[in-house]
Image (cartoon, rainbow, N blue to C red; front, side, top):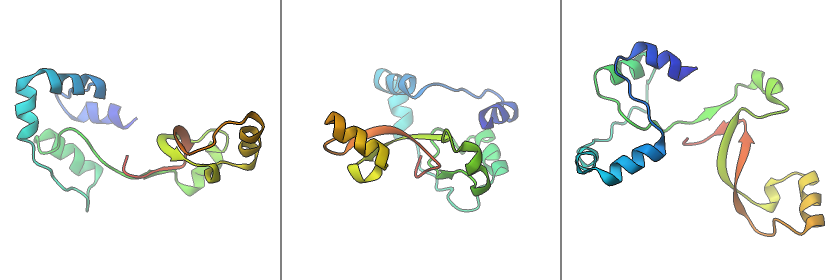
Length: 126
């Protein structure tokens, strides 16, 4: 797992759930001040695993990482039964397969698009 590897490379790594972070940001003046002082760093190009570790170690990278992820083409058959990436996304009638369309019609559900947790082979801006 990437986080296990990162923990082994970085001393004093703090890991918390998003809901805990949101609560801390709302309830602590110290955290509010800290967040206002953060600067955005664009690391979009030429970012390697080694650079990420170095940035975390020297304090240049903190917090959230926005990235695109996808399953390698050669691994897709391995995940044919159960997609490896889960995401919340808007799903409309045209996004579902024939089997689920029949089910929705028969049970009179899914009349308009809605947010759903789905399995996928890719994630954009995760």
